[in-house]
Length: 326
Image (cartoon, rainbow, N blue to C red; front, top):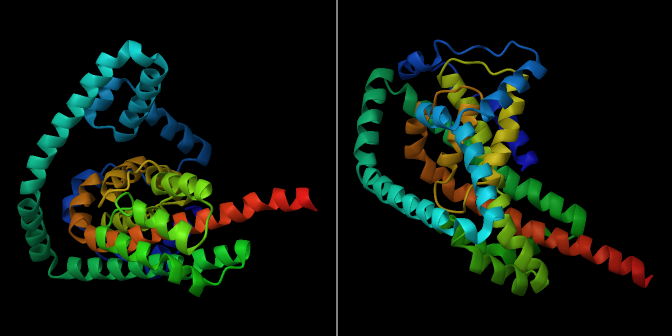
């Protein structure tokens, strides 16, 4: 994922999607944005202070990173408490189901709102927004394919000496399913079957690495979030310095690790990435219409990374055995 984020940064800096186009809708959100000229230690200290806030203040003001930290500590406490807090866990679960039902209602109306927003933006930008979005789609898709077709096969060959042609032939069914469903979780049974039967990974290794990778190894998602953050910064007329990009690097990685393997989940963790450097979260509205197009390719790369990881783990697990026998 670290390599994927660096590749996403590199492509965003080289091809610079969104450059020269500034949206008025971000003016109010960015007029007080500071250019992050403070020293790196001070910037990191400010970022960490933003993680630990009064819970009620964070909830009232929508401080997403602080809310995530609150939820993390609460979840750990509920697990440690065990059955003593089963009623509270049940209450939280029912509250979650209730919120998801309400969100479902909102999502049924969301396409109409997004269409109205895009029509307004297209009308005011004279087609510049569509051209910029098209440029962004090409850059992210090409970069994601480069990571999936060059970087991951190269890593696999360096560790296992397996031919990329042999790998793609064995992984073909899982990659096609991931592309069609945009869900690494839904693809999981097919991924396991291809990993065990076609790529000949031991069952105990595949059953550990592949499900774990479907949750914590999201190469394509991390790459997309890094590139999208720089794209949004240019749309908002903000130039991010090295310190801001380092923050994006770590938050994009953490956001991808915590993202469930469901379609368009990158939009949820994108909020964390944008919040981490003070970028306007309103940009989610611009990225939503193109997200499903990009989600197909990045999900296939996510699944490919899981299968490559299982092959590498099998190779590394065999090394101590070879040394012992010799």
